[in-house]
Length: 270
Image (cartoon, rainbow, N blue to C red):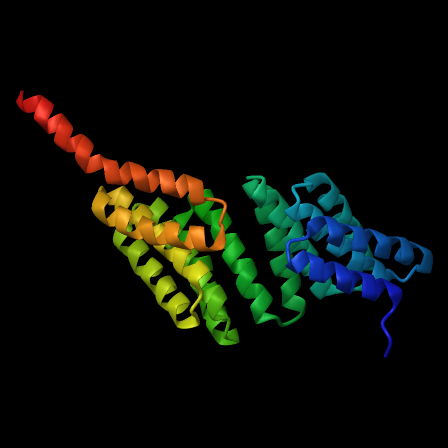
């Protein structure tokens, strides 16, 4: 079956989006929107508006993203698309969470979770539970966060999403770190690392090492902090990650620390 012009434009936009070419992706989606407005096809329009919302969200255009998502939501409610409604509510939650508006984000996530009672999607539910875990962690409701993360991990295992499982264990490690339960944080980070190593996923390995470095920093173990941060910097450099400069400065400061301590000890002796 031949694709509609709108579907072709959206597909082209998705390819650009996946490669990080956001301007090109936006142009494709905007052209698809013109086509959909003329055709009046509500399902095609909902798809295009959702894509526009996503591209605006990652580009930092929160107000535009929210407007697109709200229009999508109205269309999906008219169509009775519960799965789509749940996804759009989660996207709206993400917008508020990214802005640090934890309670508003949580409200959207819970509404999305309620919608999921109408259909079965363990993969989507697992992600949503991890999102709720993040909100609970950021608002320092640590036991609640632990419950959300634990349920998410069960579902990630059920659907075979090992990458997602590694991510949730890393999020759980950060929760325990904020809770000052450092041994639990290290255990979760090590589990995340083990999964990432099986997947040969260097980016996720770097993420686990970063949490381990933070654990050792919190415990005052500067030598071990530097060992893990050195691995993080190697990954940052290999993939051109945005925190390379910041992490390099932190590593250099750690390497200079023994010299400073030695110098201060010498001054004290004199």
